[in-house]
Image (cartoon, rainbow, N blue to C red; front, top):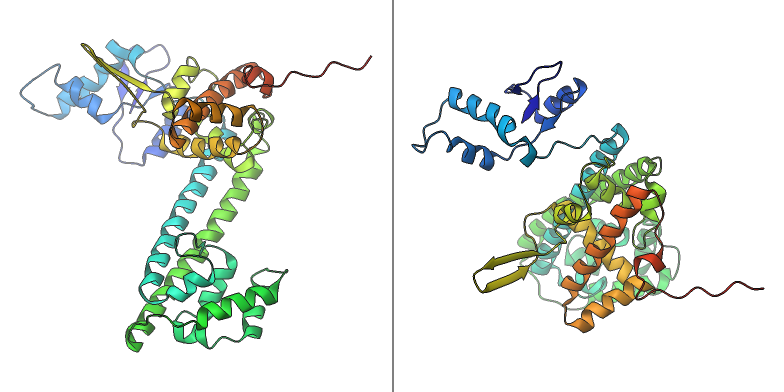
Length: 371
């Protein structure tokens, strides 16, 4: 981490303080100094410019860090000057995304455990490949009946009461009958002691899953509330497939510093949607990027998936790419790349999304005005 000296000083100041990186960056920003984040691998390569013997000392490291911005400041990017609101949205949106990933991991762990001793529960809430154990109904039933023996003893009235407490209001009798039949169906069983031990483990995983579901919901609501106060909210949510939650994640990664990216190509490369060309002699290969902002790429897949599922020019573009020969993921990535460039232009010019301008080949011609 480097910070250029202010108040007329010409030399960059290497900073080495025993503190957290976030506090250090916040303190340097308060002083008005531009901050550069240098990859440690790049610093190691710079060190080899002064010595090839692979020797290392504090003096050599200080000299290397000081010369990085003296000689190659144009080759490195400053940390973006995002507003405090945008940085707050980034904290909440990233925390919500982390909670969702932890929720997914807990769900997969619970599903793997239930397959080992309680397959009837997975059948009660759908087939084993598509069971959503994160729903309130599934968690509530599993909390009161964590073993097949307890599940077989559940009465229909008890199941109805549990479903009602979980928030279900419609077709309670039908759902209770289906769940009861699945839990009482004959299935392979573990020995009683092993089954009880696995039931305790399942109950612990349900508690973890409950906490992660609550955290994800609370953080998503907080991120959405902050995002609605941002000036870019109207522009971002005007795009198909972007709402408060996904829009907050997009803003969290691209920020609101208009000078962060020189053009739309830089933003696309940052998101990993732009292809990479590797050419050597007569060999030319075009592949997708692996070095990218993983959070922006993750929300970009959701953005493109939702947009491609709605009728309109975005879906027509996706279908055209499929007919061209792209697989599903490649077509979504191409659509994300296209809409990300449009988002960059809309943010730069402060205008909302226009389907006809965005997809002139797939857009509909507006009807003439009535005389």
